Length: 487
Image 1: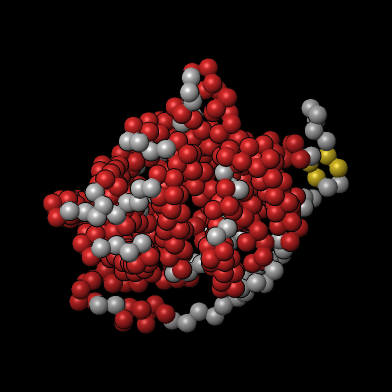
Image 2: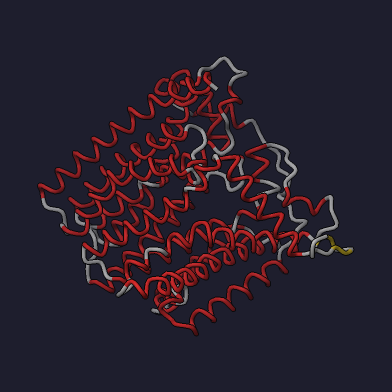
């Protein structure tokens, strides 16, 4: 068995870990193309190093740059922690009935908790090398001399990896609590109360520093590692592998929703729009998912703004800054709307691909508008934006959201998640986002509050990018219809 042993409990942990690693690599290379996925870490490295150089040249403090990298690592960890729990419900919504390696505990002598623990360990190690390590290369730019660069990169890599693992552990803990029958609203309320208490008592900064071990030295790193291990182990012990969502009786909401939609405005695509909205509503998490994604982005960006302000004394114009950044929720909103769909599924119906893409655009507007409006209003009120700043930010938010949507649908079609691991598509998307967002963020930090001329230029730019987004989304149907015919 070449060093691997088996017993009544199944294969050894080392062998199981090796199988999971091979499956992770096979899955990514087959889905996204071998060389396209293999180049993806290089794309991340170029972006991280390039952004670090640019930020340093504009006077951003090294500590602020490192904090931003830890925010990204924590957010990625929070998202990655859901992967191990996707097999039974979410993946079946997307792919139908599947037999996944993670589900093999139902047919093989494997403990579900043990398999899940090894799976999460595999994810932590895999992404620490494939994604976190390229991010850590940015510390070579911050090193005082070339000889110190390897040690600086290694230190940041360990720090970011711990933060990433801590994010995973927090998500696993929340999901484990959910499997014990605690309702989602109670978990959300508890998070809000804890966050509010941390802010009111002034310990929020100290709590955040715990997630930046590179600032706390060896003691901070050991503390975060031990805490992550304890939370992870306790979560796996608490997790109920037999948990399943309660059965629900569905009423004929399709007819009610179709009647409620303004058919005159939507046209013949109202049935397709209704289907998209119902697919979202009936999926795990329902219509709350886009709002949760927007809230997470708002919280992360607001925390980063606070850190930058406390270190440098520079705070951006809230309307311009949040208007530009929150437009990125267009990607996540569109992802939720297409997660349970494929173009092939519509071939059996008397509709064109153009009709389908047009319906998705209408559904995107119906879902996306309230999704971004709530966090944006929260941001401008919380950070006390001026009237001009708030109006310009609203124009940017609407225009950039349409632009990011058009960019996403034109490049990725019905598979927006795919170019997250496709070096070519991701590079194109990043370039497209950067063309609009980078100048906006620079203006938001340099001219506070925006002057009349700057406000006018930004407003015109927001409208212009919105028009570009509409053009891209209107042409996406014919583009992907032609590609489907060629394939």
